[in-house]
Length: 253
Image (cartoon, rainbow, N blue to C red; front, top):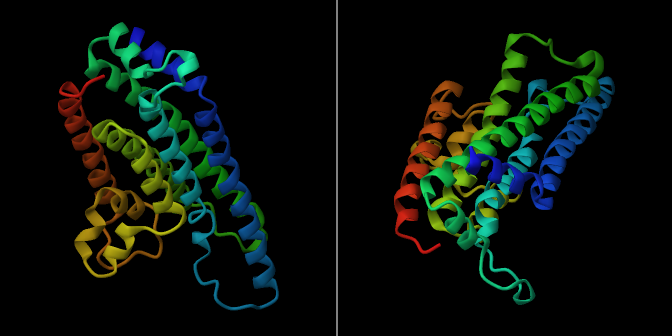
């Protein structure tokens, strides 16, 4: 419990984490409403090309996933950054190791805190974007049936697992810079994993693309369904966390 309290306090006092969560909610919700309103205007004007309105409120969650990656990476990687000399130098990881020598316990605490924060971020962003899209689409909005609500649940899982992937990879490599750049760019600029799926179907089972498969519509014929994608993405997170525990035992604090 001491480790959990300490990691919770660190997370809630991190400006980067708080800003990432704020932007991770605000950006997709606002964008979903804008896209929904634009689509509604197009449909009213008879503009073709809007066959599947369920994509409105889903694609915007890429931004929430990028924010989740920032949260996950920072929660693990921030204390490995060297402090300024005027603050004594060194790294917070050293202090953490002295206060709580059990590294697996610390990593578990970080993962639990990350899961709670990311779950909250995912729920608000996913269902917020969904409802904003419905409001923007107005009379053209799809029915809020079980499939539409299920889309919100899938979005929550996608954001949660993508953020936890950031936790796992950062803990494994012991540095946050490369995971941060890759995971954020993967959702906002270009996805290397997705490019691979265009040539090889097995690429849908990579860590990042498995999470993306939970939300991507319309589905690629080789793309796994939501249930399989969730199992694969969860499996990757657990395997990477287990490897991180083994590697971290041999790493200098």
